[in-house]
Every structure is written in structure tokens, then in C-alpha cells.
Amino acid sequence: MDPSLSDVLSSAEVQAFASGFPVMVMHLAVTLLLLAAGAAIYAMLTPWKEIGLIREGNAAAGVAFGGVLIGLAIPLAVSLMASTSVIEIVIWGAATIAVQLLVDRKSVV
Image (cartoon, rainbow, N blue to C red; front, side):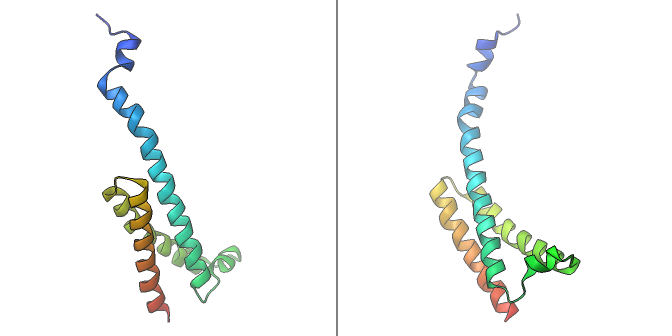
């Protein structure tokens, strides 16, 4: 006997997905906002105007800024993986961005 659509929609798996998916999307959005904020802060702190150099076609600046994005994204991904609420993501994400920017700032100066 084929299960009806109402049986499938009321299954535990579908209900778990329906309740968990919006939370996961919200956590992802917060993490991406933190990544964008970290990249913007980095762009303001760096003595080189990498965004302008990238727009002028400087490939080395693009590679360097891509490395910065990866350097910020990896700790944010770990923060996202370890956190259970948006508040935790914001706290740990801000802490990881601060540490990454401080370490990077020390290597630049």
C-alpha cells in the first residue's frame, strides 16, 4: 500500500526537516553577515586598498583578499558548527573575527 501524502508530511523526518531547516538558514545568514562584516573591517584596516586594486585588475590583490576571506571563513564555519543558537554564533563569530584580524594586523605591521 502506497503511503498517502498526508502520511508522508506527518512523518517524523519531514517534521524534523520542517522545523530545522529555517533555523539552519537563519544560522547560515548570520554567519555570512559576520563574514561580510569581517571582510569589510579587514578592508578598512589594511594599509593597502585591496578592493580598489582588485577593481583595477590586480590579480595578486584578488588572491590576497581571497586568502583573507578563507582565513575568516574557516573559524566562522567552526563557530557555526559548534554553536546552538544565534547568540552563540554572534558571540563566537565576533571573537573569531577579532582574533583573526588582530593576528593578521600584527603580521601586516
